Length: 297
Image 1: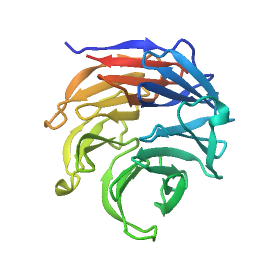
Image 2: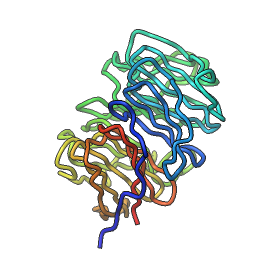
Image 3: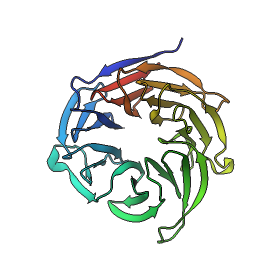
């Protein structure tokens, strides 16, 4: 029997969509169309609300020290440090005319991607390099010397050229659609797998991310969702997918020719974003403004 259920639902919603969520150190952070960041316990008890931005929050990322970054259509990228006291704790990283629609943190490096196709890397809140990948960045990740980006047709894996040049070379181009996520066991500093939808947006693909495998497909699973997949997350053993069909689904046995379905939950509204918690929990931001916690048993 497939087992998954909604374990907790937030007591109050964001005004408008809940647009993104990220998890760190037993706390959940949600961003919304109302420009607010809300901080929750693991059981979705509201701890505090931060008036972070004046407009719609696109995305968030949290680094290994708990520094929380957020971007908004007000053109600003801001950050705050624990204990995330109030809006006065927010500091501006930068502001621009472009829409920073994707962010990813790996160790001490932050990756930001914009609608013009520029990915910028940051370390200790100082800009390292800008990489012009030409195509709008809807989802981004990075590790070692690799940058992963995707819009609507292809996942592009770029290798950063060493030195202070900001140059890169294309390592692989794989047919696929946003979003993407790195997951699976770490081997050295690289995740074992990279997951993303197929070009229909409704099927899922898993490729091997380790150097000797050259991004070979592990499996392709068509029509996993009835509508477009809007968000992915994963851990060492599981992949989770959320879609505009209101459903969040779980998968395991990732190394097999076909993954094993863990189950699914229907949240009753479009899934905008998901992130992994602990013990097979997935946190969900949806179009009704509420945050939910799904438990996959």
